[in-house]
Length: 300
Image (cartoon, rainbow, N blue to C red; front, side, top):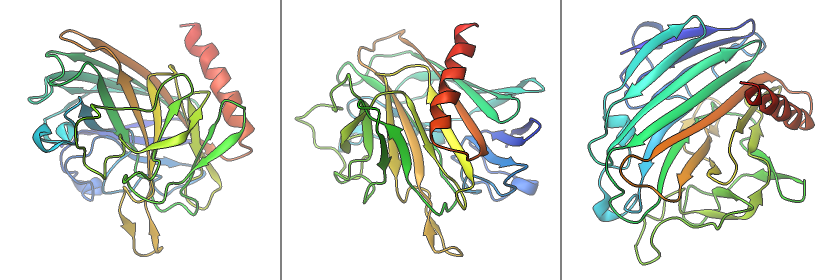
């Protein structure tokens, strides 16, 4: 077990590996990595389901993913990770070459004043995809019993849309693609698990690579933005984080995917994303925060 705590004036962020937690984090279950806990001076309860995590690297996907012959679907859960502290504000989570898909990865988490988490993901494929040419990565953030489970995004007409599918996969429309790409994954001749979120496409499309939800009682904003458009897919499960019996609510998963169309041995992948966790003011603020972030990373 390894975890580190990062702080800003407003946030306390606990980042950990994929082993069981101990001590005050003994409720954390093995298999889940990334942000074990996200709290704010404005919202002291964990934004994420305490037994699991947020910004959790969940799947490494080639075109055999979610088929009978594809093998383990939760490879990042099973393969050991190492956590190292880089500075007062930054940690890095490392995973050496995975046995099935041959991916080595590095994920750096950095907190920014007063209420942001930056995540930089870098990966290298040490072997070609077992089938097809494409390769994908999938992250899950398990949200702790929000009054409203829905995610919101902006479509190509500039209209705010609500993503709140009826089910987990099974053609419920869980995954939203960018307007510039086809909604497709895998080989149409293959039979995929019907509960796969990756293969459950919405008919809608997003324009700007951003999304937001309102955790807890709705007073907080959880906004996420990405440095790329077409490779990113937004995703939501209404029940991925299990059940909160006390509140009689299901815990949704606010997810995202990163897809490489042409992958082979030595392909290097890189994605940057920012999460902003602050009191909610208005949904239009999300676009403003996204614009500010683009200016910031453009100057780096």
